[in-house]
Image 1 (cartoon, rainbow, N blue to C red):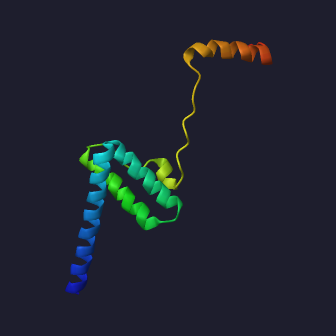
Image 2: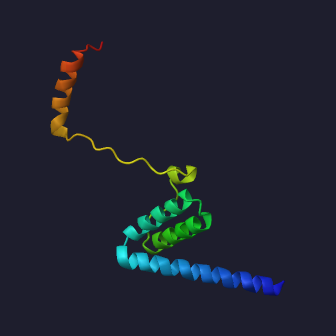
Length: 113
């Protein structure tokens, strides 16, 4: 029984050391962006069905967030296992008037009562 516990604790220490090393490497090379890189690697591993590797990269991201005092956690997209939608570029404010004029030409003026 004690041998089993010792073995389990040794394996856990080894995993924690590996996570700390990966976190240090990402912080050294990317700074705060290392957190986002680790999150992306976790997502990629999850998409490929590598749950152990995905969990490991999630732990690396958590370690980086903890060291850098960042607000971290799972968002809704991570919880349901999907990639977040890409951002949509909006027209600059100056072009909005031109867009309204083009809409009126193509659809005609509309009255809202």
